[in-house]
Amino acid sequence: MSIVANAAAILRAGGLVAIPTETVYGLAADATQGKAVARIFEVKGRPSFNPLIVHVGGHDWVADLAHVDDRFARLAKVFWPGPLTFVLNRRDRSPVSELVSAGLPSLALRMPAHPLAQDILSAAQRPLAAPSANRSGTVSPTRAAHVAASLGDAIDLIVDGGPCRVGIESTVLDLTGPAAAILRPGAVTAEEIAAIVGPVVSAESDSAAPKSPGQLAAHYAPSIPLRMNASDARPGEARLGFGASPDATLNLSASGDLLEAAANLFGMIRALDDPARFAGIAVAPVPLAGIGLAINDRLTRAARGR
Ligand code: TXA
Ligand code: MG
Image (cartoon, rainbow, N blue to C red; front, side, top):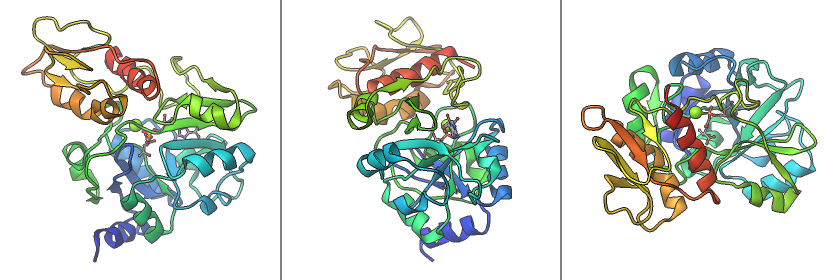
């Protein structure tokens, strides 16, 4: 049996499969099976108030699950498949388990672009709930080996699709209210969204009870302290560079390319998170433009520690 057919069979039987997407690896289960979804929360150690993203295999899968409007239609036409997640009002008779949206009246939906994710969705013919395939609170996985290291024993299959092209989680856009609101910055930027549907607000994500419950203050935390906007490394610290950084232990992008930096971010934080070698990680400033906003968002959370 091919890996895709195997993954689809396991998912339909209620199992858990780590799947590659272009952003990060996801820990997938059939979103219509409550027991399978419950296992995601258990394996990740994820608080049950934090809802999951549901992945769809086509534009035409959405109508059964959620209410859509003209803003959704215009944005999905441009950015799907891709790293943009929409929060929409769920349909009363949506087949998706209530557990997925953690009791909220909304549902987060994304159509991933990674060819293996698309093949698995088409073979399974089920909407797939999939958070990032890491233990809750830690850095998201951008390679199959990251998933194996943290969840390998607890799940049924890991599909290796190589390193993730984008490397940072999808933009989460809330369309449940009159103003489109970014709940989590990602590869698709506010400017790109505003160009299609007009002004976008950036939701407050720093509070104790953020609108996107996953955006808790302490997240993505390595086991050693991380400092951002550091002009140089202190004794004992590893140096994570950006642009020309002759003293860098690792460099997010020597040429100063933000897309390259995003793709390298989580893997390099993992590589430097080694208490036996380093007392901390000093990260060079990363410009607050384009995907640099999402990079700085993740660094801010990592810097807060656990
Ligand atoms: O790129 C990604 O988005 C990856 C890949 C696997 O798709 N997934 C991912 O999932 O990052 P996760 O669970 O790590 O993050 C999902 C985010 C969380 O911040 C969660 O609170 C938010 O989306 N979310 C999910 N459903 C929501 C809803 N109904 N309302 C508001 N926020 C929601
Ligand atoms: Mg996550």
